[in-house]
Image (tube, rainbow, N blue to C red; front, side, top):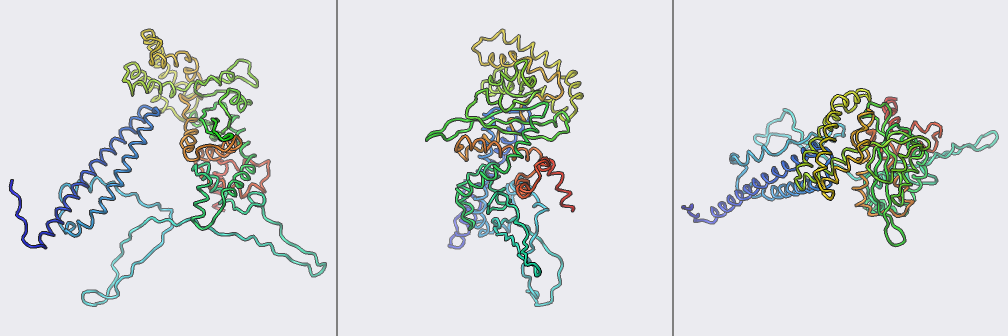
Amino acid sequence: MTTAPLPDDLAAAHAMILTERAARLAAEAEKRAVDIEIERLKLEIARLKRARFGQSSEHGKKLLDQLELQLEELEATAAEEASDAAPAADEAGALDRPKDDGEERDARRKPARRPLPDHLPRTRVVEPAPTACPCCGGKLRKLGEDVTETLERVPARWFVIQHVREKYSCRTCEAISQPPAPFHAIARGRAGPNLLAEVMVGKYGLHLPLNRQSVRFAAEGVPIDRSTLADWVGAVSAALKPLVAAIEAHVLAGARLHTDDTPVPVLAKGKTKTGRLWTVVRDDAPFGGPDPPAAAYFYSPDRSGVHPARFLTGFSGILQADAFSGFGRLYKPGRDPGPIVEAGCWAHARRKFFDLADLKKAPIAIEAVRRIDALFAIEREINGLSAEQRLAARAERSRPLIDDLMAWLKTERRRLSAKSQTAVAIDYVLKRRRSFTRFLDDGRICLSNNAAERAIRGIAVGRRNWTFAGSDEGGRRAAALYTLIETCKLNDVDPRAWLADVLARLPGHPARRIDELFPWNWKQSRPLAAAA
């Protein structure tokens, strides 16, 4: 193979080096683009598998997180290399030459940019145009304009509101008149409702500890001690107690509830202990119920069964949960004020088989996952229909699948050792057959307990930021605020906007009309208020 002769003069050699450098950078960019596309396809395949097979195992979730992180790093590296390559490409005159096939493929791979949100205000910055033709000095006339939009953000705007109460004296009797002092969001507080809402949602919605919020506020020019923020949190929690209690009552009035719990590290005398945060979710939308969804959270210092019995004291109906032994006392006949009926979670049962199918490729587990997925496919089609319609569809389509599944599980179980992990997964279903098949007799029952798992997932992720709760009382306070924030999310309400408005109105709001402040009622009243 012959190589091109080297140039004799320095300028030509310099140009050749720049050209080769630009070509090398372009080749590296091409390879990087291929790597990004591979990682994006891997991520998409993983997501499709998760969607196809329902709730995945914790291993699958970690795999998704890892793929997203790898893709993020590759895209950041590609952007950095592209920025570094631009000067060399310009210097070599690469921008003036036609694109080769590799560059065209790279351009096609880049996704189209999303348009910037229409609701954002626009600030026009008109670049100064020449007053005369730069070529001949002639007069110019406007042909049109090209607009390039850039998304921008400025730090939060801080300001002080002065409530002025003017005094007047009567010229006749010299009596002094003055308007009453306005209500404060918290007693003797100097923080406005919007600031309080931001602190509360930051701590309990975005999982930002108060010390981090204090540092951020100081960087914006408004130093606020962490102790002051903590005082605000305590005062707001006290002010919102009636609303929390009202939402809890709404949740427990449901005919069917979901429940789940997650561990929470709690500081106790120089060490940490493990408390629990429980969630109880009411969501009637799957069976076409008219009542709005809501979630109530409760804290307990341990996982004893006395705690769910305590916060479910006034409830009777259907409870969808995992097979936690502590729930046993809830299902006892003759319970006062009424019986609680257990409904099993097929997502839990499926997860046990899915782990074996994914990690060990166990044939029985793979077949079990396939059969359970067929049940979930039917549920997706009838989601949102009335309880009667769901019950009819299940009788026609799901019951034959359940009968075949149970018979098949019994047959396969007889062939397995009691110590087999597959046998353990099968026993989990067969020993609880009545609770797992109860959905065939009641159209209100869901196939899984995913509503509660979704409500508890944010806490499980967020506790990595705040490390531990400061005390048992802090755990109870967190449960109360999670109740408000998660209920807002379930009703498609912005927690910060809702909380700011409620804190401003609550001091003068009649207690007998507390239901007007529920997120679902607040959401309906906002368009009317805006129109007025």
